[in-house]
Length: 118
Image (cartoon, rainbow, N blue to C red; front, top):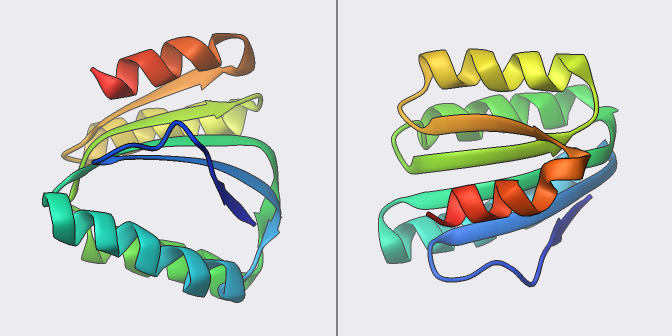
């Protein structure tokens, strides 16, 4: 499930992801993100994946399709996690994506928020 955090403001969306993501989670969350993109043109994104347990396959497809559709709409993405695969995925995303992507471990969550806001 996606939980929008109170730190969200203007073109910055901050979320905490928990459990196993489903198609229904994406169907509820994507319109909120697209509303901000429509309003501001581009967005910054902070995501805490510490409690993420994975995706249903349909949700993984939703994530992929959303990413392709909005490839140029992200300027910064800060990911807070605690797993090597999350860090690796952020490094790969930074190399292939127009947006700046950085990974932060959970002890540096405040730094992640400060960075994505800048």
